[in-house]
Structure formats: C-alpha cells, structure tokens
Length: 142
Image (cartoon, rainbow, N blue to C red):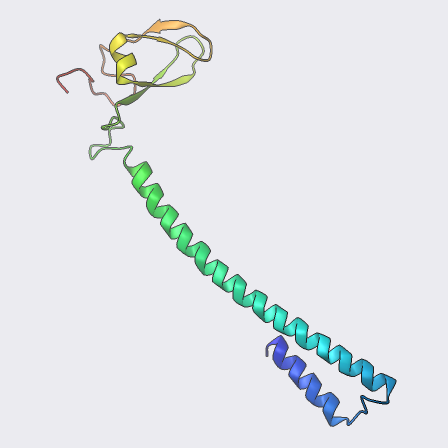
C-alpha cells in the first residue's frame, strides 16, 4: 500500500466517523491533518518517481562511460599486448629519483632527457629494446 493509499484510507475512516469539520475543533484539526498528509504523500510519490528516473539516467550514463573507458583504455594496448601504439609515447624511469616519465618519440630520438622531478639529465639506453618495457625496438625498422 502506497502512502497516498494509506492517506486515502485514513480520510475514509475520518469521513466514516461523521465528525463535524465545521463546528468541532477536533474535526477541523483532523481535516487539516489529513489535507497535509495528502500533500506529503503526493510529494513523496513525486520524489520517488524523480528518483527512479534519475536512477535510470545514471545507469545509462554509467553504461556510456563504460563504453568510453573501453575505447580509451583498451586502445593503450595493441593486439599483441604492447603498450606502444600509434601514440608514440613511451615510459621510462629516471635513474636518479625513480620517477616514471612519459616521453614522446622526439625526446626518444634525442637520446637525452631531463627529469622534471629531480632536474637531472640522463641518457636513454635503447640497446635492449625501448624503456617502456614492451621489449620492442622503436627504431625505423619497427
């Protein structure tokens, strides 16, 4: 039974008692209280409907966000699981402070990088593949 149904039942009980709402103070009080309960019941039903609609919208947004996350984060890996895609960004670790740095192909070609954290310069070792940990070489050969 909804709140509105309960209030309607209460209103029916009050009318069944045949209380004089015009002359009796108690009757006036009961009549006003039932009127307020009706308004509260309608407001609660409106809030429940709005809450349900918002919940459906949140579910739809959550599904859309999951789709976007899948597109964005799944593109970080190629079919072979390599993190080096078409973006030409690579990760390396600063040998001085241990900070993980993301560098682009231009910095990789220079061979020297300055860490923004400790401001020390260091050379990139490209002999054993790249510093991103994928095991591939990022030279012109592929």
